[in-house]
Image 1 (spheres, rainbow, N blue to C red):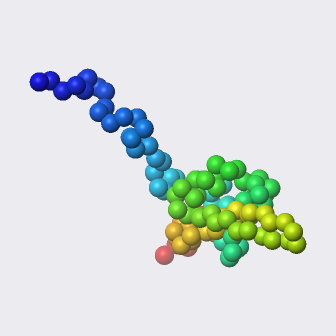
Image 2 (cartoon, helix red, strand yellow; image 1 turned 90 degrees about the vertical axis):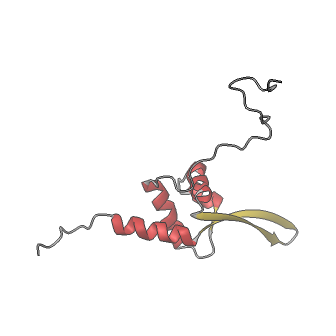
Image 3 (tube, rainbow, N blue to C red; image 1 turned 180 degrees about the horizontal axis):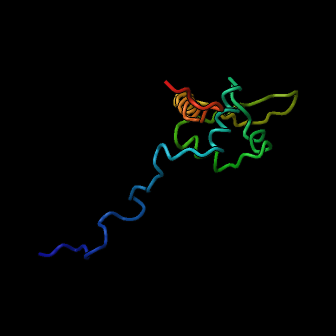
Length: 115
């Protein structure tokens, strides 16, 4: 008996299929490097709203988190009778390594000496 599956149509229903994901380490842009540098000087992380205020886009932050170069954690801040949740972005060990690699690849302001 022939298979009930028609040619070219997957047998897995769409709701059970795995989503296509971006590569873990997409090419980092200058803007990604700038965010990593800001995160590098903030040992406890930076508030997402503060990063947005500095002009960084949410998509750039999401790229770094998806690439595992940064993490996001939610902290609850209490002030008298109110509580707010703050999302903090923090650089990871992989982010430090990527930042070091990007810094090493940047051109030196002086030309190399002849040997």
